[in-house]
Length: 352
Image 1: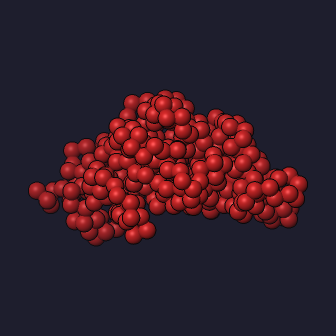
Image 2: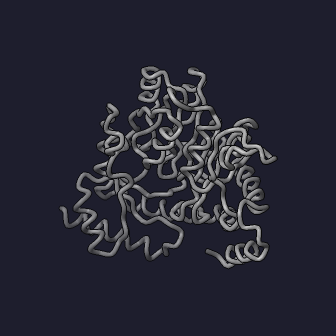
Image 3: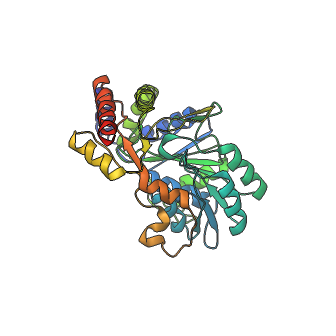
């Protein structure tokens, strides 16, 4: 947290307007403008953003939403919160995002009512194919952009690629508000319905015309978010620089480095490699003090709460056994990056 962020929070505390005040409205406008859309609706967290967006689109009981099984469980949970059911299509093994061919087959089999692609690890999904499918089926597209702030697809930022998009500002994300989320859209009606849903279904008066939750963002969180948004371009630049060094130097090792398709800009929320002996590499990294993590070790449909759903997703299930994320965050020094590379190269040498 920068000194500016701390000063902004202190100013909010001094103002006494702590809940859903002017800072929140400013943050909504600034973030929507950053994404290149008309409306922003701030929320308490990314899960709340997804839930409210689905509700605003009218998704509910009896509906089905197509998404990926290789994501954080909140992606599917928010569908069930509305009374609808998620259906899962397998992933592309190179991008880890939903596979367009699998998506098309699954969407037609289940007669889906919406499509929710996830821009996993900070890499945008194949949005041309997804939006073409959505147009054919006449269903909305909800971008789960929780990990992809500032990523671009054919020059456009995520958030402006579907009908509505949702972001998370959890502390591990590329920018944070502590806890928080954001819905962005060009649709006036969706923005209005989402804003009403996150505020107890309340209109501008004290009339509560629909059911809703208290999913509002605090003014302190928004104050932090406005500063973080200003810093986001530099955060992304550093993440991409760190990722580039890792990719170039690990190209000749046994691990598979991340891909970045042409005309797509990855923002590396996670720098995720693949290895067919993950436990061994993790032990080696741990022994040398190199942080690492697995996102995600179990597909959503393999979680106990979703075991009643029959899914065929061999690529997602294989990825869950092989992916491993390395440090890529902006606080890494050049020496830190060199050390990560050195330790993995040393691992390869020992395997030989």
